[in-house]
Length: 253
Image 1 (cartoon, rainbow, N blue to C red):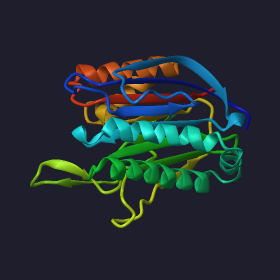
Image 2: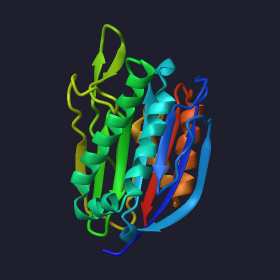
Image 3: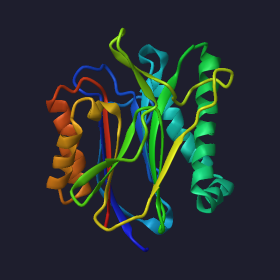
Image 4: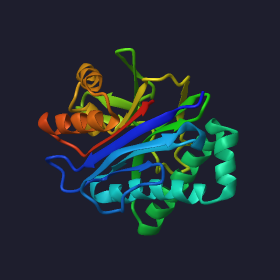
């Protein structure tokens, strides 16, 4: 199926955080290590180009979460700068994404060891589009949703567990885990592309602030990716903006 993807991205530090530790990678565009906010106006790319979209949510507060998310984006650039990486993406999306996650993990842990930091990490959510299918990948609790025929479906899998005593959610997997602790296992899912589908990639700064039913309603109101991304982002801020917020919306034309 020959199709195009219209996409847009919003990211910002929210209302309570001192800095934005989120980052993203959309068709070669990402942010520097230090940044506050970014808005990407409407862009369109062909599925034949095998476009990829990532959202990274850096964790660790003073433990350089912004560096972890930045390094993840830089790893994507480095892998795709090598013709072998480009060939691997076209040959087998699943194997490519698994290997890419492992490389990100190695790059982040190498940085942590060099800086003498115990925990430096980032979550990851990704969508890779191809003419015959869409491949979803995630590590941690950043999410990917699909909106189709008025319904919102979760395509990713949260690697997280709620601790009732601490009253907070802890991550079971993230980019930045040392090999001696355990080996990360990225979640992979697939879908057949269909005209009108909308894919949403987001950090938990959106999902913690906006319920899924509201997310569904907001996407249904917007005929463009840019409109949906803006509406979701500003709704998260209006609902408290307690964390960094990153939203990438991809609409199949």
